Amino acid sequence: MSGKRFARASQAGGPARARDALTKAYLRVFSGEDGEMVLADLAATVGYYRRPSYGEWMARTRTPEGFELHSALSNARAEVVQHIMGFLTLDETQLAALEKAARAEG
Figure 1 (tube, rainbow, N blue to C red):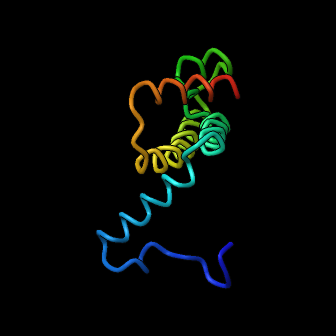
Figure 2 (cartoon, rainbow, N blue to C red):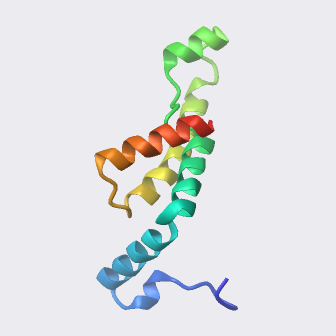
């Protein structure tokens, strides 16, 4: 950690500069092998590529009870990965590699 207080994007001065500062920070954190490994692990942990389907739920549980909550939780977890990926510029090849790595982790 950098000190007593957390650094905030809003300290960069104005919304455009704050967004730019935050984008650069996400790119620094998630670039390179370590960043790729962490992003793949996060996607696997939250089940980003294993979203629940109603058919699978019914086949497994034989009841619709709980599916709505399970689906909402899954979507909320996926929002974290989507938020991070919104700051990154991943092409189709990189996205496919991330999915393959995340599926291998999970």
